[in-house]
Image (cartoon, rainbow, N blue to C red; front, side):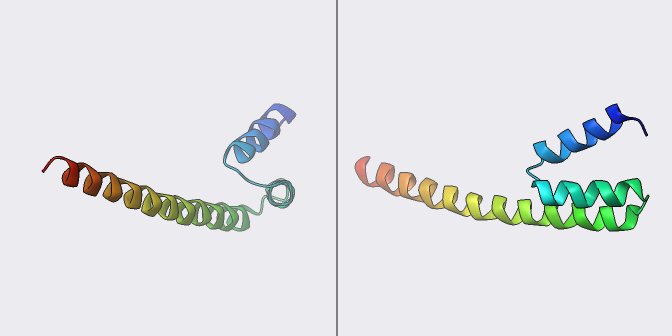
Length: 76
């Protein structure tokens, strides 16, 4: 693996919202070819992002419901 490949991986992790500590741990394991640990790290971060997404979706749903109720009450 060359420096460009490693830079691309680091940039991908940054784009995915991974912190510097996560990236350092990931890259250390990656260089040691500890793929199973890296996959666990990625799955864990994905799960965290998905939990955040669901939380934000619930907030959007609350706003959508309020807009629906206000629209419905004003159109009667």
